[in-house]
Image (tube, rainbow, N blue to C red; front, side):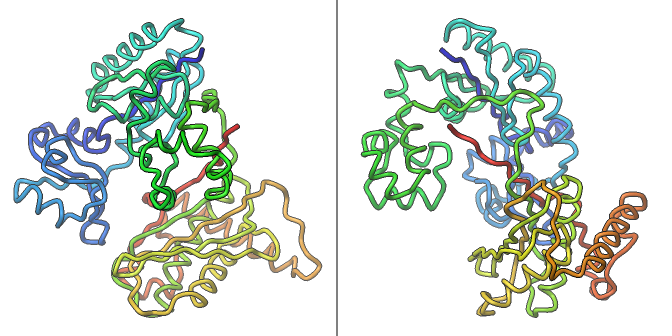
Length: 413
């Protein structure tokens, strides 16, 4: 029998901000991006705001409608959250060498070698919960189970500052009545497909024929079927384990709605530059580039294209993304947000095609490396494109300040 914990720090960003400013602890408060730069979306909220109906993803205006003028809006401080996350996960590592992060505020902990029963596992979970509260001031909800999926689900069932145990004997009672979208990896699109088949609960999913789910959802359908039946056997990765990355991306809400292809090109280049920098740091090349676009009605789509040869150049990422934009965007609305993502990453050294101008490629690589070195030494704004400097809104953008996403490969047996 395995014993696995999933810890979830409650309202993490908001809780961190309350530690730094206790005066806002008893007021409805939300953590938001920069309102002036149009990133004013709720990233986290405290329990008071949550009880008043505020949800993550609300605009500041929507949150204000729930809480009135008492609402406190705090700007995001990622450095604070990263520091506290490290402290908490160091506590976890004192109980196991298998601690697998699932974002900045969540982690799985395999305690199989430390306990011999669910009673002992529950006791250890409470010990960790109390330590986190005493040593950091943060509350954490912990799920205890025999697999990762149910442990994750358990941490969601009772909040804040609680422990929930899901065993082979009680999972049908506790898990099966839940809505199917509470299961890990059931996203919006998958949920809609399941709804059309009248699969509304996790029990419905578990009692659906596996072959039918494979027909409907492919390999993902088989995986979700096993999850619903309690058959997940995914391992908790050892501390320090480095998963293979499958993509590196960056997106941003633009400082104003974009109305011309020139403006779009400028933002795409800033995004591509940041993605290329991190690809260079990881020593990987991309076989594909993906463009993501959101218009001013909040409708969004993504498109991707394959490179003739793998690349790590910002120039190539930018040109690929811009080509996709010109092919697929009809300008029915102005552009609110953009994203660039490098896909199908490979660590293998690049083999140049006989059609490539090797000297030009190497020259471009050296140039981008020089820019990276200068920015690291003197700051992001030490060197910029002249065309971008002409626009004050674009000139102020620094893609180093959050917004980027690294997507590890999700491995399941």
